[in-house]
Length: 419
Image 1 (cartoon, helix red, strand yellow):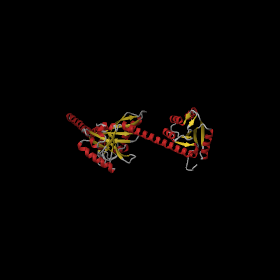
Image 2: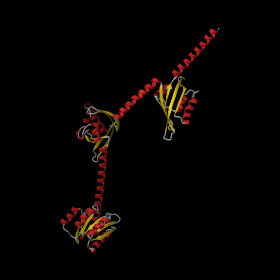
Image 3: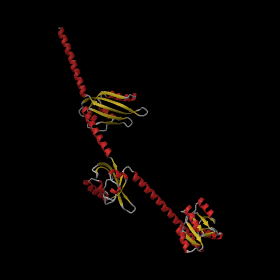
Image 4: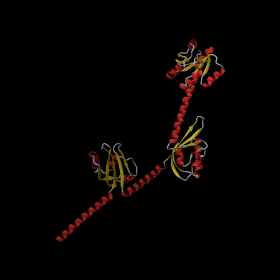
């Protein structure tokens, strides 16, 4: 056998042959060609069917004519039971017409018994052909599975998806995209993408997108507010990427996520935070939150202002807070807060002095917080407020002075009356 002919180590062969002598000649021919084989001979249809159903073979060798059975019947059974197993007809002369019919019916080859030296090569070619066929089938199955997965993602995605060519023509859109832009697929596919936008923006966006696509200068991810063709204003989070098909043709895949509600919520949150910050500034009341697990302290802008600093001037910490407390009050403040944690009380409240950096100005503040607990009841967070009560303290001191002066005056009057 030619050294270039390679077949798997042990070849399992099913031989449909009624002549014991011909079977031995075939077996000896294959052994002489260097093929290690395991070959079984049968000559009845029932045995052929039984073995095909209960065993696996690398190749089938079938004589054309058997008692009550022939190669056409065997080939039909092979096609029904194990269509991927190669099938060779090894027989005497059967005529060109019958040989062609066999090949059309699915046989891999036909070898005349007078030329059995061809058989090893025919077997190799049949096995290679079967393997290539199996590889094509696997590749086709994988491609089909990939296409099915792509289609499922494409059709079921909540995000809008659009495929565009280098000329700005919309090649493909999914259902979510149609819903986002209020148009059908027929109104979008095979149209330039400027049909999506208001007349004043469409041409500009089309030109910018084509240029970015061709020059690879597009932004891969960004947020943008768009005026659509129906004059609706929508905020989108957009992701762009280039995909290339096997033909080398490139497309721009754009994924659109409607974030209009999120943007509105962010605007409302900013308005709310601005209102709170203004209210705190007017009332001289700041808010804070201390995460005891992460040791993370957050101050509102007004807390910074109360302590004589610019808003968010530095990262607040509990230790930094204590540095602002008047030296004579530090121990009492630290004990009041840590004591509330240690004792497991629900809140903490104290009035104390602070010293503003730079100016050394002493201010009075009123602090109060509530503690949050985890499922086990352990305090893990404190949420509180700090209020500048310096004006109140000053007023109280002035009232005390006036009261003292009034009492002193009353005493003097009493003494004068007695005199």
